[in-house]
Image 1 (cartoon, rainbow, N blue to C red):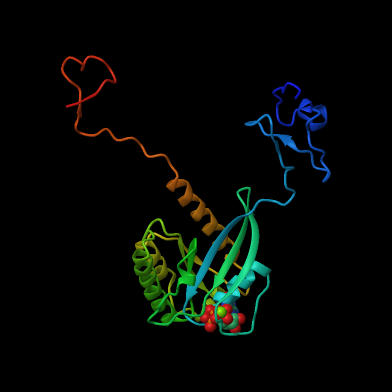
Image 2 (cartoon, rainbow, N blue to C red):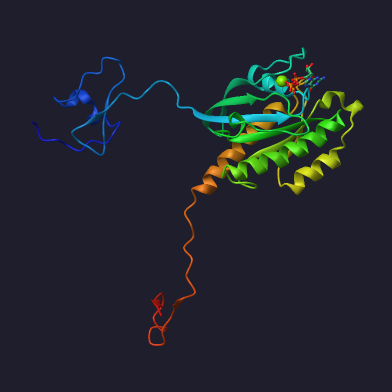
Length: 255
Ligand SMILES: Nc1nc2c(ncn2[C@@H]2O[C@H](COP(=O)(O)OP(=O)(O)OP(=O)(O)O)[C@@H](O)[C@H]2O)c(=O)[nH]1
Ligand SMILES: [Mg+2]
């Protein structure tokens, strides 16, 4: 076996053809030497882009536009026909802040005054869009109940209840706002009380639709970064400087 030399990955001398033990790159992509194991070669880099997968569920009363908004986001078109949903999903790929995302938009069947969540809406869902219609006051009342029930269910399922759970409140059908029944102030107040963002959208004109989903991905991402922040070490109160040691900086002892 020839003596192995340390090569910088991607340097011309790291080329596999420079070494007799390098595997041939039949696929055309050059294998690279694993920097941690000089006897191994990594497989050729994949040409398929890497996607981060997320699931975003859209909740709300019947006919508020959950499907229309999901379709507008995923397919860039307005669906004028009303077909009550019985659980659906749309795939949307996008790039946000340099990351490729493959987002499954979980389109739920409309919830009523007494919502009950199945596992499909609570397990594996990264964020929730809480939708009501600006022209339907009852739908605003229902989304408050849905939100309450969602938090109850997720706490029971041992998922974090409040701040850590990505949610956005959305008032849809902004294009027919002349028929508005829910004021911006009332919706904003509810959002503020729950510390969540509020958007007004139109599936018809596409106004703010993508913005909501992009914001959601950013919230999900920010929460993940927070979760993985290293804990700041806390000095326990039982740790005291002893008299003789107190002159020495940064020295503690347990009493
Ligand atoms: N003008 C206007 N119409 C909308 C908008 N969003 C939805 N609609 C219409 O409202 C009706 C209901 O929309 P859907 O998206 O099917 O409502 P949904 O919330 O999915 O209803 P369920 O599946 O029964 O829960 C459809 O006829 C849509 O075309 C909007 O922003 N503007
Ligand atoms: Mg629907």
